[in-house]
Every structure is written in C-alpha cells, then in structure tokens.
Length: 107
Image (cartoon, rainbow, N blue to C red):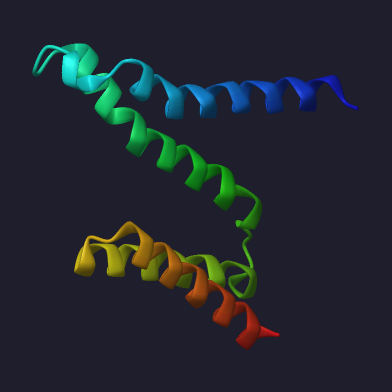
C-alpha cells in the first residue's frame, strides 16, 4: 500500500473521529455560555458536513456538463429542500434521489 495514501486515510479518520467525539466528550452544557470553546464545539458539526461534502464532490467535478449535471441537480435539491423544510434527512434523501434519477436519465 502507498504510504502517502495510508497517511491521508489515517489523518482523515482521526479528524472525522475528533469532529464526532469531541463535542460529546466536552459536554457543551458545562461550558461557559458564549465562550470560545462553546463556539468551537458548536461549529464542528457544520465544519464536518462541509468537509465531507468537499471530499465527496471533488472526484465528481469535471468540465463536461454531462458528468457534472447529477452533482448540480443533487446539490440544488438538497439546498432547496433544506431551506423549505429545515429537515436534514428529507433534504439528503431528496438529493440522493434527484442525483440518481439524473444519472439514470443521462444513460
């Protein structure tokens, strides 16, 4: 196995673990209200989502519209449904369905 790939996989795994575990370990109900640590812990959720989105989207980016269209339609569906419903679950499922239907239509 390539040592660079292994190092990146371990770093990504450690960062993912930290984003998920640290807020639980540092129970935010015991933190000073409005303090820097509370703001940091509260920001880890959105930061983790953004990181996973970028990691998932980079391999799909291409100058060809036919390959980029499923990514665009799925992302627009997620954003539109989240704004409309404020439900992460509904938005995520809708984005996956729209992405899949777009891929199917392009075949």
